Length: 497
Image 1 (cartoon, helix red, strand yellow):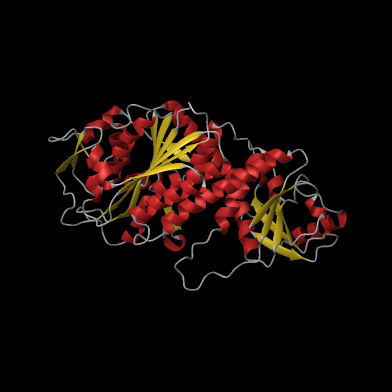
Image 2 (tube, rainbow, N blue to C red; image 1 turned 135 degrees about the vertical axis):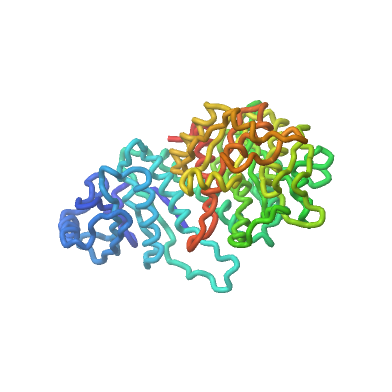
């Protein structure tokens, strides 16, 4: 797919399809529609007939439009103008691209990107349109013997007004496409079955990104982790035939002396729960338990594509959690890399056991900030559903940066408490702390557990259990929170407009 910026009267150029937005009970905005009078009269007649009422998500394809060189005109409903904000804009782009994908058009230009969105810049509109277009066009059919039919749509243009600088628009487009590629990578890794996406496969995916972009990388093997003393992480892998891996990749786009941002992604490639076995129903979705690792690798790819002037280190602890004769048992006690001992009361609370050693390992990079990403707790799904990612942090400024980035990306997070009061639930009679704190505030106590290993740096934890994948008819990985993380890095790099 080819993407481009159209900033000089795209209505007067020949194309396969123009895409125009229509508000409820309103004609198109003059700011977004600069057509000939004959074309305007024809369109007014179409709208007056009731064929397109402007309801959000509705579409109408028209052909043979008077005085219009384009073969087709696609009308997209925008809903009520006073309610047209981020969500409605993204929904309109998604509806437009879906309709174009299913049409016979080989190329199209979206005039939707000219429509003002409250408190958002022209660059934001272009960046979001590109990212949403990539998301909508994504397909995962690797394991289907009959592939989806190829669609003819080959190029997509985004219209901007004359006041939008070409350089700014081009940069926003490049950013949106990079985010789209990062999301697609995270989705593909997440959608792979557990018999393909093993710890070794996931670690190799990290190395492949490093090779493609000439980055430094290292894979820590089981013997390396044993020598270091990562017994908490290793305890999760004991029941599996798949050896654990810890992938480390460094992107150095900033100044040599600048401290890196470290992203840590939970990479449980399949989670049976171990000896604390999960129910069989829906267990197939536990292949998505590595979406934290997938998302930090997707963010790494996006940052490298954009050549952001930041230093970034990505850690992906990759483990499979299986029951077996050597598997950890409830009541076992392990010593973490930090020296703290952990009583494993539930082997299905394994994500925090691999993350805690990875967080301690992150100390050696003298990080500016550490952000871990994990499908950590079902409790977070109960608290926030499938809309917002749970955000916990020991640093208010870092939390505010992430919340702002999530808002800008329309990949939102909600800050949860991390008060010392909750630490009481992690007390153990036999070790320094237990790996679970009971049913009350399960997502909070999980974050409190991780905080015990993040005391030496500014740290945030993103619980993506409710946002990393969808179930039902649309089952599949979402690629979140790649947009949030990339916007966070863009802002830190001073490249967010």
